[in-house]
Length: 130
Image (cartoon, rainbow, N blue to C red; front, side, top):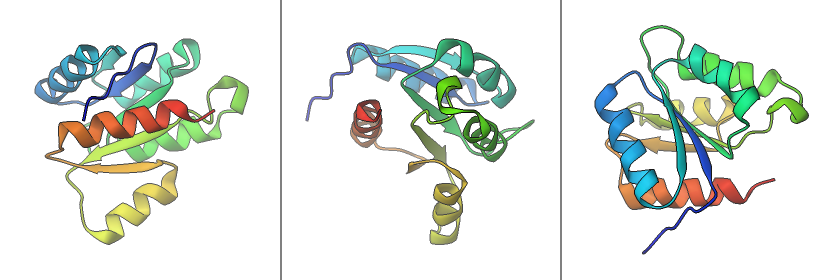
């Protein structure tokens, strides 16, 4: 299945440079505009100003984690980016982890190692949300 993402701006945050580069390359090759950062704090600083269509965040990062980031994002008012559609990229895959991630405010849980087609599909779906 071909997933094209023209005019979709994705903010990607992961503290692993290899994952960040891989996801960025893959999304850009399908037409997305990507802002890639290595920390949750930097992502939060940029989110309100850039207003991306989709947020893709790693969960486990060395400083602030994905839970910290999504709590901060969801605390923003809608006009400041509080409703930004978000998916979590994580190696935490058991049902309890998945439920906690979704309760925290992410719309999707994408297990690492992730399937590229699934990741593209999730970004496409999230980009459709208001």
